Length: 178
Image (cartoon, rainbow, N blue to C red; front, top):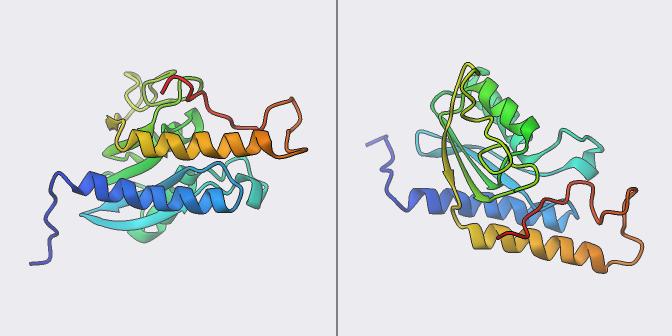
């Protein structure tokens, strides 16, 4: 029996793997967002935010995971894949998600300020784009939110940690509503 059995706990498990990646980001002093891409019940890509480490504004967990998944599949089309990510994708990541034609996106914490999967706007189901993704929001939300809150609290408490413009981090999401 080669095909894995998918049950209702699979989403919970895969988000746990994304949370593991988010903790790696936090350990590296990156915004704690983690992502995994799943195809046919198997993880084919894992990534965490590396914007500061790589000095690359596009090095979001989702972008890095999508690139790995494309390499694993051998194609830029990921039509039979699901992305699990701990924070709602931003507009840049949502654009890439639509372009690779992911079947589904599952995220934990919403982002009212910049979330592009339904909170601030919904690029993943935008009517005039060539593809729309199924969205599952709020999976393991409390855990995902707590990682972000703890990280940004720690950033505020660190002496001299403020970035230009006065914020504690250049990509501070608005998760205060959670």
